[in-house]
Amino acid sequence: MHQTTTFKEKIRLFMIILIPILITQVSMYAMNFFDTIMSGQAGASDLAGVAIGSSLWVPVQMAIVGILMAMSPIVAQLTGAKEEAKIPFTVQQGIYLAIGLGIIVTVVGLFLIDPILSLMDLESRVQHVAKYYILTIGTGMIPLFVYNLIRSYIDGLGHTRISMAIVLVSLPVNILLNYIFIFGKFGVPEFGGIGAGIASALTFLVNLILSIWIVHYVRPFRDHRIFHKLVKPSVSEWASQLRIGIPIGFSIFFEVSIFSAVTFMLSAYSTNTIAAHQAAINFASFLYMIPLSIAMSLTIAVGFEVGAKRFRDARTYSYMGILSGIVIAFLAGGIIYLLDDQVASLYSDQAEVISLTKQFLYYAIFFQFADAVGAPVQGILRGYKDVNITFWMSLVSYWLIGLPSGWLFANYTGLDAFGYWLGLIVGLSAGAITLFGRMYYLQHKLAKGAAIK
Image 1 (tube, rainbow, N blue to C red):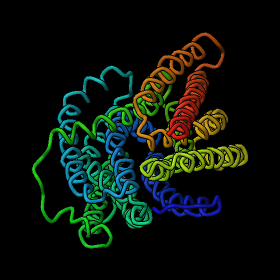
Image 2: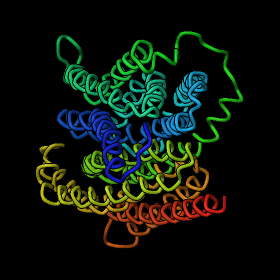
Image 3: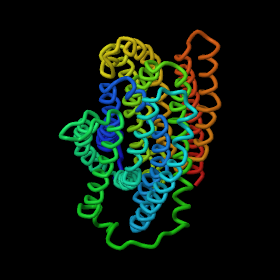
Image 4: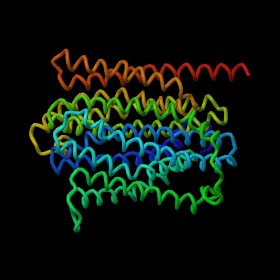
């Protein structure tokens, strides 16, 4: 990261940060994308099982990753304030925190998986795949969390191409492992959808090994000597990071888990409906990687400028990012509308699943516009370290507005299962509007304070 003086320089620097993050996020989600597609080729029950397993696993994963994302604005602001000497201690404590959170989630998950699945009215094969998909992917939880902490540190310094390189190496590894474990190749038993969990866990380990090697040996990261001399764990530093990370993590959890809650409610419908819902939500989430990448880039750029107290520059980056998200939303919506047949056919060759998937995809078009504003604004607020208000806004928008309205649409109109998706659109839109209002208020408050000084 470096200071920019003209709008053209800001666009150039923003794109330098954004493009590698976008490639990284798309590649990381491509792992889940290929898990879903390849599991679907193994059968509708395997696709539905992975859908249920993902609906339980992904919100937990994203919540913890969100907590660890606090490292990006912390490092960005330290860099902007020219206090880089504090970075090694901060990153080491973040690694300890990632390991601790991984252990806690693993232990709790082992006790809860059976009771939760027993509450769902699932076919026996679907329940079997869901359970062991979660158990196998869960073995890679600690490597995943530590990798994401290291990645947030790397990205916070503005070296987003490094994260991109790591994922571009690991993606083909994940596809190969999926092929081996899902379909039983090279003497390995055929695991079906469960094999996707095994492949993902091994890929998480590959990512961790690559990231440690880079931080230890490659400049400028090796100059921080992160792994040369480990310090003792500091509970006070953990608390400091958690104060920023927990609101971020739970904001993400509220947004992601509402999709899981819908999957849970759709378990009362047929296996084909669950499979179609998962296929459509998988593709919509794949497109969501674009506004999410914009959000992550904004966290770094805004955090750097806020650390240097250049609030006007931070605001310029903010609106640049939001405008980019809106443009992308029109493009993404057009892709879904024009290529609905091709997209649906990627996930299944069963006529009913394809037909239902196409109907779900039409609702996904409207997701794009809510995410075009909501996701970038969340990234902006993280750059300001303004995370507590967004936590409450996310809770209200997604769980007190979105999910109840979806239940009403599904049960008291003719929309049936599609009513839940309409509720998702309502919740995401409410979140985008309230978050934008918070950003506008905060920026004007800071601008006014700077003018007084």
